[in-house]
Amino acid sequence: MVHTRSDREIEKIATSCQIVADTLIMLEPYIIDGACVSDLDKMAEDYIISCGARPAFKGYMGFPATLCVSIDDAVVHGIPGKDILKEGQIVGIDCGAELDGYYGDHARSFAIGNIDTNKKKLLDVTKESLLKGIDQAIPGNFVGDIGNAVQEHAENNGFSVVRELVGHGIGTSLHEEPQIPNYGNAKQGYQLRIGMCIAIEPMINAGSRDVITANDGWTILTKDGKPSAHFEHTIAITKQGPKILSVGSSDG
Picture 1 (cartoon, helix red, strand yellow):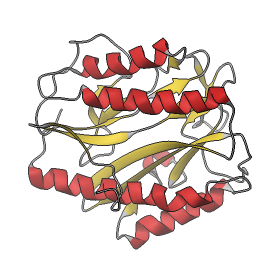
Picture 2 (cartoon, one colour; picture 1 turned 30 degrees about the horizontal axis):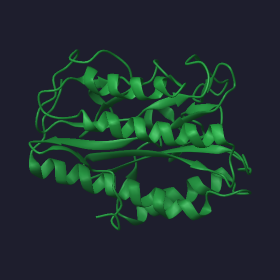
Picture 3 (cartoon, helix red, strand yellow; picture 1 turned 135 degrees about the vertical axis):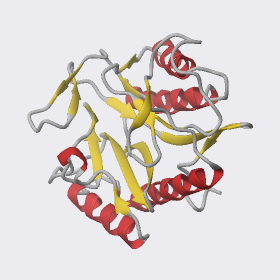
Picture 4 (cartoon, one colour; picture 1 turned 60 degrees about the vertical axis):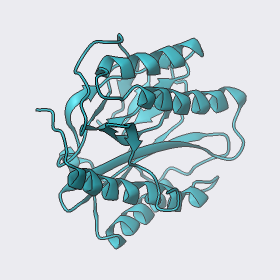
């Protein structure tokens, strides 16, 4: 079932999203060469709890942590263990929070120190692909318009779009209908309506779009070992167009 949310519900989703955005802003100075990813996870958990919220990922379908931390060829769902971040890597950090029964979801990819030009382009294009997808999230458009915009920008820049993992509706559950693929044809799929809240999250690979699952049963890796990037915003579809909810308290 696809939900449309009242203004009050959208405010509650926005509050949870702001907590998640503030969590990543808080972490950013510590996402550096030499950082232990399990320490980042503990910092995120403590911060979310200090805001009166609950880490939404921890325990979700058995996931053991607050953050998904995905380094270089890890696409998404990396379990934060004892890995140490190193200069030249890129790392995707995905985070969720629940407050008063409403969920927020947000992801960013970060450069660790100086990165090579291809990784820099991958980060830039993935973020741009997200914004192009968001631009299509207007009432009367279709889910396919979002995916088509993401796919076109990524592939025109020489990158590939992961097909097995998609964005999603969000609200009183972390993952709701409809699915929001990062590929597809314009004017196809579910029609977007005022009040829908969705998470758009391009996962873009530097090489082939093919992925595999690691032995831990969670981490998704690029099959060719090339790097991948991930950015995600939760948005509300309003009469005026898309409204990004996953912004920090200092971002307005």
